[in-house]
Picture 1 (tube, rainbow, N blue to C red):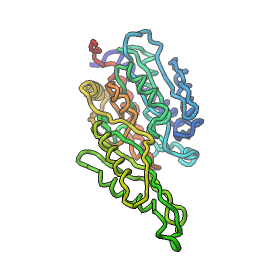
Picture 2: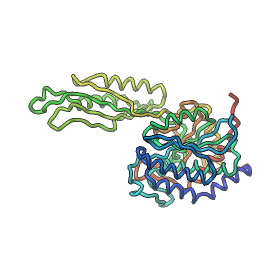
Picture 3: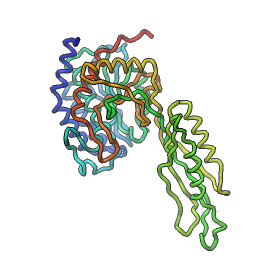
Length: 390
């Protein structure tokens, strides 16, 4: 049976549907590609203004290159209790001008626009849940929010902030989009993004072919060897997603390069796979070539622990009272939730509104899922069991 506080919180969230859509529209209609600091910070300001209107406290953690991290908190005087964190990122994969080309719209119950589900919709849910608890109080432990700026490029500036904050938390709800099935995410692969370069020797491909050493030829051998490392049964994939090189069509290529996406499930597989990739880099099939490998960014896997399983159980039971039948799914996609889980903080991901087709012009969000998902999150917070003594 719902308590009076639960009824107040869920009822207020239900009354905020139009306000949620308005904030989402403003956020989606503001370009915020990961490398567009001004745009990312402009979206951040929309949320800072919202929090100010609702009496929440915000602070910026500045960065010269990427958008600033935004910390949100209620004016809570329980310093000895670990807070619950509502987390999300506001950057997108889309170039500047995309919001003007594809502005926010709603069609047949689905909202469209760049970043609408990944993950500006989740930020809106987090914002309104935090506002609800500021308005009515009653959270069993302190609440906090974190809005980051560069998740789509593996969080180069945000990862240290996320890990630092996560070590002081009770748990994390990361509001990436809910799966098309309505499920949340209880497990994710880790991902390492690498660049490799091959060096050969230029020569005229007609007059002095024998003096050339083709970096492109060696690159081709290495790509074939790398792709053979894929082991679908173990959840390991290697994909060379981009390649480039060469000087001209009539010159043996002095240089070539490619970018690798490595995905894995078990944390111990990371070192093993990096070792195998390095072995391929160090082994030349085309005599005279050399190569090098470097990590450009990475995500850690989101692995379930007993504590995160309990967190999911609490959320699922709360969601049922919001009219949702929630299951947990594993996905090959990466997210910042892997960083919080890796430092030992119970983490549940994809508690945002339901959506799909992220990173494409067909990205959408199910509008009808916004209020129930916000209510489910609020009820899960209210029903958190007492923390175990450490």
